[in-house]
Image (cartoon, rainbow, N blue to C red; front, side, top):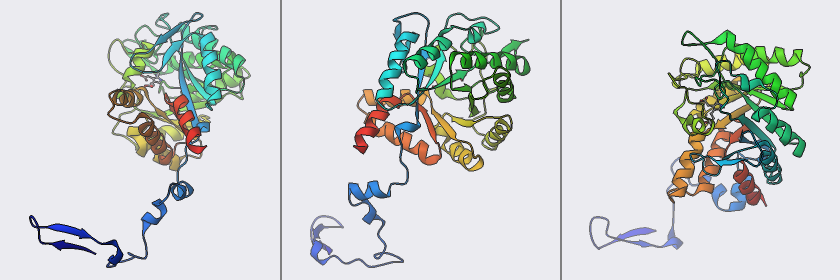
Length: 353
Ligand code: PBG
């Protein structure tokens, strides 16, 4: 019984006597007590509904030309651009930590209106793919297929009369995807948001004998403020305008389902929602609407926020990062692309040991 005794103020001094506790039941209580399943760590672990495994994680990686080149990315603490030889070492290290997939981005100063460096054999992304595959043949190598890092204006497609020309961009995107497949990519991931690019890429891959190379479509990619640090990493911010004419409008969700349905028809093997934490509803809707594996991208801004707060001691990095990854998987993602992949794989393995 908890009883009041005369003392200060309205509630007085409270005397706690556990031996005489009684609970007046309303409805299912006291027979039903959800807290029983939270009493010990063992029970909580037994009945946990969502489990995140290192198998689901994909580490983004930034490739630059050269040998022995390593450039830390200030806005993405702990991440770096690396030349292909060092990326191969990174692949071996993260594989040992349990990370089985990487998403490769090429970074270059070689930019022109036709994004020529995007589909050049031996350019940083292609060289990195080959180096990673040689060093760690089992690593699943995914490549980001886009033109924004290679065009002199920074848009994701070809610009004609000041506008991104959808259909002209398709041929260059397809060419880029084929060059990644030729370098050894297992999966190509178009992130440009042009209409029809999945079909164009699928047809081009098949025509070149790459029918086993899968397409992971950035199907529902929103025009998000959370890509800021990435654009520093790759130098891909558009010099004029923004990406709202092709990336999705954040307040929409039904349109995400149209994008997914269309990409499925064009032959996508997996679909992605991006960003992740601010689009958990879209992940859940995608999971319900599609039979394909659903990937979610915890983007640069999501990572940078957590890193910045953790660096100031305002958040526990490990707990906060794992909570976000759990939420993304709970919402329905099968695959999570995250800059935390290496650390998270280690944390998850420690936690399950
Ligand atoms: C290329 C691309 C971007 C990201 C992935 N692919 C940038 C953009 O669309 O501006 C963002 C990834 C991140 O923020 O971590 N189009």
